[in-house]
Amino acid sequence: MYSIASASTTHIGKVREINEDAVLETGNLFAVADGMGGHQAGEVASSLALTVIEEYIEDNLGVIPGEKLVEKAMGAANARVHRKATGSAKFRDMGTTVTLLYREGDIAYIGHVGDSRAYLLRAGGLKQLTRDHSLVGKLVEDGEITEEEARQHPQRNIILQALGLAPQVEIDVVSVKIQPGDVYMLATDGLSSLVEDPRIEEVLAAEPEPTTAAKRLVDLALEAGGTDNISVVIVGFQESATTVPAAGAGVAGTGEEAPAGTEKPRAGGRPRSAAIKKALVVIVAVLVVLGAGFGVAFYFYNRTFYVGSRNGKVTLFKGFPFWELAMVERGTDIETRFLPEALRRRVEGKLEPESKRNAERTIGSLEREVEKNSSIVPDVVGKKFVEARALLEKAGLQAKVEPAGIPGMPADLVVVSDPQPGTRVGKGSQVTLKVTVSGPQKEV
Ligand code: CA
Image 1 (cartoon, rainbow, N blue to C red):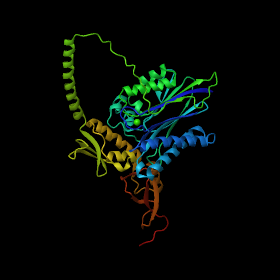
Image 2 (image 1 turned 90 degrees about the vertical axis):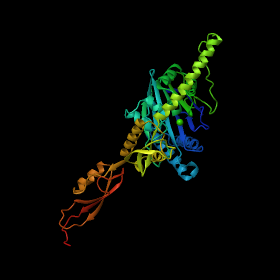
Image 3 (image 1 turned 180 degrees about the horizontal axis):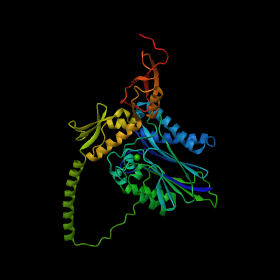
Image 4 (image 1 turned 30 degrees about the vertical axis):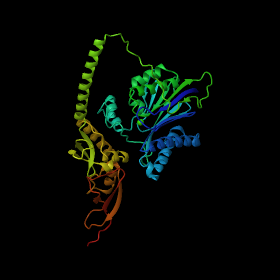
């Protein structure tokens, strides 16, 4: 058996007006959640999701085994948040990421939806246990952009999956056999998008005390700008020589207190003459003006395209989203109706401006999303029914049969497919096949 030492903290950051993150730290269950949706709905989504998960696991402890338990608990949270979101205009479109660790025996189950992350520090090396369900996460996975480019990507806030956005959600669950010395960390993107993995590894490896490590990580994110809410949960496992109670072992950080990590190393200043100082000030001022000019030019040069939709299809525009005069650079055949609901709304509301190259990559990744969620009706007309049905099933579609009495035709042939072959339809859609009936044909 292991003893657990844990800590959790959530910080509003330096820019946001509310903290939409939530954290959970109880006996064997630890989680972070990053809520979204306007007017404090995000706050409601993240805390509601964690409450439902905690209750569900408590109620079904020992009844449902670990992996299923995590999946069902997160499914229950999804249903609850979605119900609340559809129940009133105030909460419309709200959702939340959830990344959790549930410990059962010597197994850590990591449940995950969204772009928060779980990491494991083992033997001094850091490993990410989750994959981001985000547009840029996809681009990184596909090798289109680097982790570094992802941090700067204008579309970095677009999430492909989150709890509460739809009646059903895909939940990732991985299980890890715990080894003594393991340190698990859960964090929202307010940390991972600002602090690079090697820095996280350094802090976790150097600081065995979870509360101190969590505070250091939050400080690093704040120093890097603190542009988002920051939440960190750290769970360390040690072989228990002395029996330390596992439940509530950690110290939960309180919400808004700002860790005062102000031990900034100061460059050793040597006294300078006033003249040199004055000259330096002038040079710096000139550089700042030049730099700002280049910066602005670069910004505009680099972001004059955006992805939006026109007539239900993904379209590349030249110009800025706020210009009425933006021009169509090129249209595509990618139909927005096959995108996941949340993403569809984002695209229809125009994505952030970006460079042409990045916009093309964004389109590529939207195309792959559409391909994942839809199928093209295969060429089934003229085929035997059994063969046609197999083709449809292979494409993830269902066959519905209607008998067609056509004199002189051999039986069991598909004569009409509705929709027609070549049409793109949602995954799981029904395709009606008119099939010639067997038995003697009546002459008309
Ligand atoms: Ca966030």
